Length: 269
Image (cartoon, rainbow, N blue to C red; front, side, top):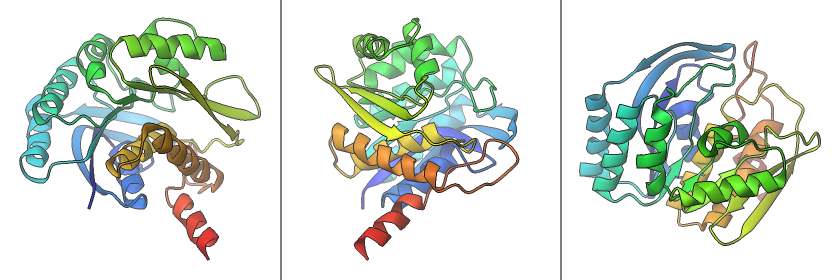
């Protein structure tokens, strides 16, 4: 049984954070484990409170996994502040977990900040050099690279800058670009660029898409997939999750985490 660990915040609404990660791990047949960095009071209308864990609590959770169960891949999500980022980085190095997927969560769907400004430099200095994959959306990539991203050439330049920070593979998601018909994700492995295109879906129910996408990559890496194949699977997984709308809540609703497996059952039958 392959295992995956998510180190991230809790979303009480169940659409993002560790809840989205664990649902995704389960759907992709990986045993999911978690270390909470913060508890949020959150629903489809927005974030109504953020309550960070102590650094000691985060470390103890990670050590409980590392000293007993171990893991085949790790994903980080909302890490909130610089102290937590440094502590998480130290623990990942201690256990030599090299299948690390960093989802640099900074802003919630409703606009609430989920990462303190001073934490950005800590992420760049401590966490990113450990990452096998980073999965920023365009606004996150702009913050990390300190450049504006308007074109596909800009995406490539941003990916190269992130590679220079020590990240081995960069996936810049295209959900925030201006293309009205397609969403184009870019993968850079340090040598070659790959693009992954999907039909853009008109819906407000995209809460947790970033968490779910990066969790799917994490699960596939735990299962032994290559980076390229992991991104292909994750792209298919999140596309199904968005297309099979759940219509939950009054705001930005969650995606459908079991849509992908339901489609596979239909195809097999």
